[in-house]
Image (cartoon, rainbow, N blue to C red; front, side):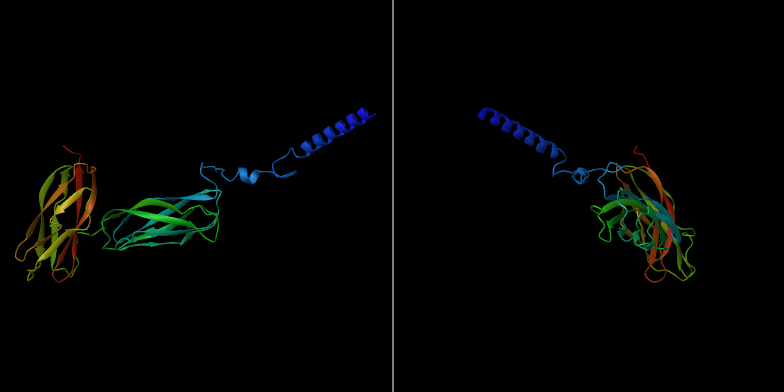
Length: 265
C-alpha cells in the first residue's frame, strides 16, 4: 500500500513540473511577453543605417557676382520624420544665404537662395552644413556635410566704375604645375591722376602662390611685375580669377582673367 501511494505521488509531481515548463515556454519575461523592442534596438533602416537617424545631402552651387542661384539641401531619413535645424559655416564675403531655418517634419529637402555681391571672392569655397533634430525628436547625433559654393566673376567685371580714376588690365595666365613665371599688370590712369595703385588677387587656385602677395603700381609708372609659382601637385584645370586694384584714394577696380594650370611637364 505504501509503495502504491509513493508511486502515485511521484507521477503527480512529474505532471505538475511538466505543466509549469509548458506555461513558461514563451519569451523571457513571462507568458504573453515578447522581446521585439530589444530586438529592434539595433535594427537598421532601408539605407543600412541605424533607425531614427538622418543624413544631410547638400548639392554644390555655382553663382556669379551680382547674381543669384538656388542651393538645395536634401535629407536621407532612416525611420526619422522629425524637423531638422540647419546651420552653415563659414561666412563668405559678400555672399548671402536666404532660406528656411530648418527642414520641416517629413519633408525631404529645402531650397536656399544664394546671392553673390560685387565683392564676393571668385573661386571655389568649401562650406559645411550641420543639421540637428529639433523639438526633442529622437534623431541620433547631428549630421554634418560639405558642399561647394563656386563664385564666378560677374558680367562687366572688367568695366571700371564710372567714377574710377583708372583702369587695370592683365593677360590671361597659362602655366604648368611645378613651374613659375613672371607676369605684368598694367594701370591706365585718367588724365590728371597719378597716384599709386595697390594690386592683389581676390583668390588663387589651390597650390598657387603670387609674389609679392600685394604689389604696387608706383606713381608715374604704368606696370608692375609679379611672380606666379605653381606646386608640382597642383590639379590641372581652368578657372576665372579676379585682380583687384585699389588706389590710395578713390574707387577699387577689378579685372577678370582666366587662370589655366596645365599638367606637369
